[in-house]
Image (cartoon, rainbow, N blue to C red; front, side, top):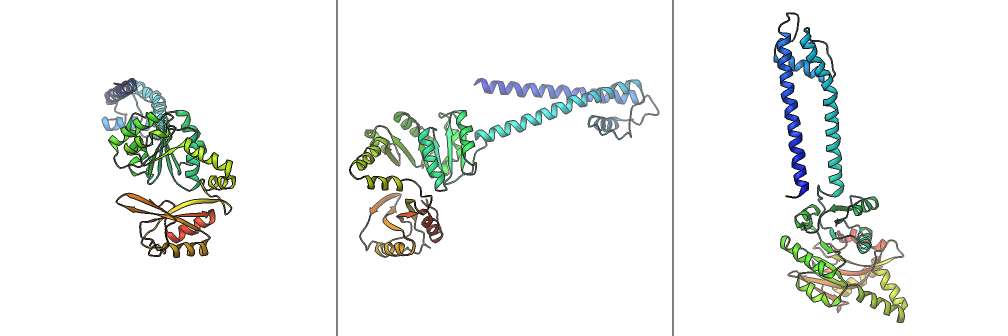
Length: 358
């Protein structure tokens, strides 16, 4: 049994022992008070109930004055109650303070869990995780961060609202703790470790507990792409491959490279552009239109450029880049568009769905 659990059990047993001693002492004092006071005809304390009432009034420092001891022995017992009131209140205040502090710490470290749904779960925290989180927050998405470093929790909570970002301090090997980030209802899980092999092992371990998750990883070694896809990873991104393509574009087509870099990030204003995809619902005004008609209507009405669509069939996504004009847009398709920040707000109002729309 881990030492923390042993210490916790010892503390519980110690507290229970102290409580038992206090209760026994309290009952003994009440009995003694009744025995002393029944020897005096003038004393209002005649039975056990009277003694309990007197002790409550005394210990709470209310002091109604309706009952008080007349015998020397009764006064000694009353003195013990009066002195005990200081200890009891000190003990109670200390316990309440400790309880509140523990609950606040548990909440801060994520031990009370979250009810986020359709959110991103990022396991492992570093500079890449920070950049990913910035993009997610920029498009209004929620994220849950799992880290095994206490200092990360403080930094994340200082930078982001707990309405947008949930943090959990956890041992990466304890898969059952992932229930705290509501991983089963997440949109995607990003395993963000430094080593590719460590990422693969962790994903395989997670899949033993949660079967239907979507995983995404960034790879240092692009040769491992097929291995990760075979392991059930939904998307893999090679950091070196992306960097090399962008670098080559800057060398020969600098304007294309600048455009590509711009649309990879979220659009903050009307001067910023981004590629977004939205799910077509049955109420979507573009459902049933041909691709060509939708292209011109989006450009005319909202200055949005339709560049492709994705058709989903049996969980498989078929991406069609700039399809021929007679392709019909159907419910559950995803429209892929280039737009500025202002147009995205207008489009969400028309489509009645958020970006992504999973």
